[in-house]
Image: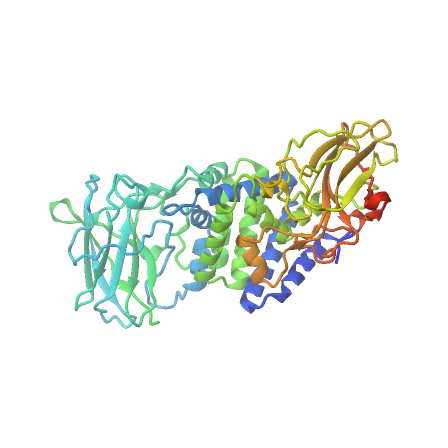
Length: 280
Length: 280
């Protein structure tokens, strides 16, 4: 079908029809929905030629910003709330007693070093406040899970993750994998996390500024928790005293993930946080 | 607002609300609509974590494929029908007597060499069929426009544009800018264009294959036509005998842009095609 005087809606229908031959039914469903929503967006705002080209350039710049340690498209997804939405779509069994998940973020690095319970993950003196994060991993009946893996990563008191500062922070600074003991307990010695701006020198930073938004995330420690027979959990532990809890720029904060960092002996803050996993 | 048990729709509303502070009202309108449609897409298909990550990787790979001579995001826009839709939104005054526009495509290079009417743009022997493209540039009352610029580019008989084959084709092969004479006429000596696959070694080519689509464009010559006091026109002249007129992979074919390449003396094909411009 050529589009002599084809209308906008006829063009959309034609593009959707061309995708009918997609062998995989799920890919067909996703792509046809994508085309319909993309076209609806352009029709609704009456997208101009210049705006289209601005979009092409924005996406190109975003791609060029991505490398082994920088994922600008995840930042974009995060700041548009898409990451949190996908999290809600897939992990929002709010009636369950399990720990709520939140987004992965762009700074996760696999294969963090194995540490012993009570070990410190601090390999670089950033002047941060000494902190103990500890708790128990349980199933939904409250039974401790021994041998669960608690994979921890967070930022230094300077605001940066190790992966953002090669040559300054050791690559494994403030990262570690812990195994829970027979009582399901884990314990991490670290520094208190601080709020930080997401990387703001790329297209996503420009977009935040152009849309009158700040670039700050509330202070948090990332955790991936996994154990045989249970669904892996990706979440954060937020510092209840942090700024930006109400306006986290990536929409990652959940009330149930806020925890107190309580003053302990010798100026150490102690954060008790238990994780509850759901069966596989 | 933190999203303790926030619903999907509440999250969408929250992201839209955060964009309220956008200073530029048009940017606010576009971004808020983009967020709503993006979220609607994810909710409708119940986008999974893995699908989200596949999308992130696809966009990243698409960005990495872009360089000075390759624009994979424009290819993506073209193959999803978005480019033709934006063209329809902005240039679809079908009641006018002007020449219909179509998409720019990814192979346009500015500053093509100036040529004299009747000159050849062939700088490389590709074995193509000798062709003359000629006609008159007019206003909507049919009056010839002298001094109009007709900027022509198309592919070689091998299927490739000069910009795709540095070191093989001269950079200015099959490209040229012509000025219409006192009678508004232009005349280009060239070779007959052939159907060609869009670049298929990147993410867009993979997507076409995965969705059961071919990668071919119907044979055409690109033209940008401009003159003082008139809106610039970007269009194609399609060979009416070409394959793929009914299934052009970028949805660029329009009935009114098809032309006959008529056998002339000495085996030369002659294509008469007039362009009609609208006032600025």
